[in-house]
Image 1 (cartoon, rainbow, N blue to C red):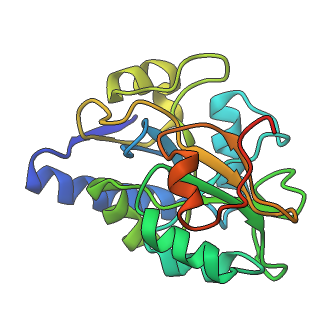
Image 2 (cartoon, rainbow, N blue to C red):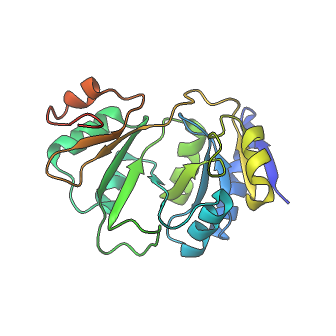
Image 3 (cartoon, rainbow, N blue to C red):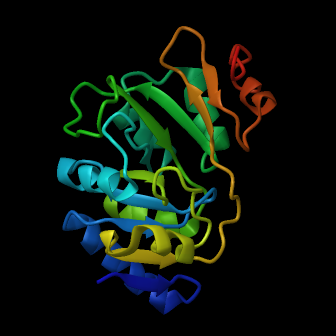
Length: 216
């Protein structure tokens, strides 16, 4: 049986964060708000939990989830290399709707799916999400929807699609953004936008003017 917590109320938010942390510790799934759309979260270091996330969405291992973090400095622990310009970019644009695809640290003991030794990382600009991430550490988080349907912008929409596959729903009202994040792949020689989103190419060029647009 799922539990839903109203995060607009301070007492309910605290109870919800505690319940969400416990659910994640137990290998369960949590729906949480972000600054883009609602996400479905699992413990990134629990292969069973990540597999449960993929199954809840109706996805295969060929579509691994991104990882959300609670501080820009956490990126250094997850990826193999952080050049100076990328450190400046994330410090300048995080928290926010920017996802970075990097080569992951070889020593990481996780299984997110068929990642080809890469990881997509983002720090969301949402108080509830950050409150949970600071309790749990990095979480595997994908949009809260079943494959082929629009990403949920309300808890009600997420619950209608995901139901009791999720242990805890954190309700923070309608999503402020509603548009998926900009994705930049930095694994190659030249950084490249893979998906256009709220962070523009012009903003990215403030930190690295070699970033190529999507489709280039």
